[in-house]
Image 1 (spheres, rainbow, N blue to C red):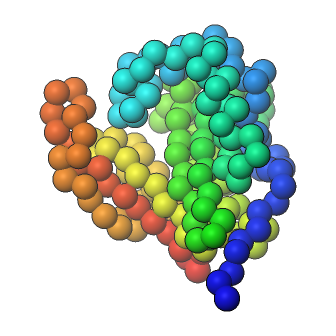
Image 2: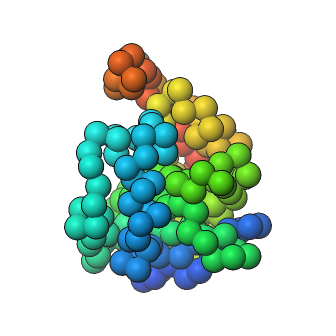
Length: 185
C-alpha cells in the first residue's frame, strides 16, 4: 500500500533570519501587491507578465487555494512587518511532492537575501519532520539568474531542461527544473 502524506491543517507562522512567512490573505491584496503583479520588471520571467491583474483577479487566485493542500504564502520583513513578496507551494499529497514558487515584489528588498531566506525557510519546513514531504521541485526561465541561484544555494539539483520552451522579450529561452529530496534537507 502506498503512503499518503498528511499535512498540517494550517501553516503556522514560520520565521527565517529576517523574514516571517504566513498565509497570504485578502487583506494583503492592496495597491503594493497589485503594483508588483503589473510591474514588467517584477514579473519579467513569469507568465504573470501576460495578463493584467486587478483586485478581482487576485481575489479569485487567492480563493483557488481554499480547501486544498496548496499554500499561498506572504513574505514579511520580520522587523517591520512590511509585505515583501509571496510564495506558492502546490502539493501532491498522493506523491509526497511539492512544487514551490517565489516572487519578491518589493524592489527595495531585491539583492538583500530576502528571497533566499524565505525560500530556505519554507522549503526546509516542507521537507522537514513536521510536514515530511519527500520531494520538492521548482522551475525558472534560464535567464532568471537570481532564481536559479536561490534554487542551487538551497541544495536543489538540476533535474531537467525544456529547451527554447518559452518566448521572453522576443527570444526563445530554456526552462530549467530543479529538485531536492527530503533526504537532503
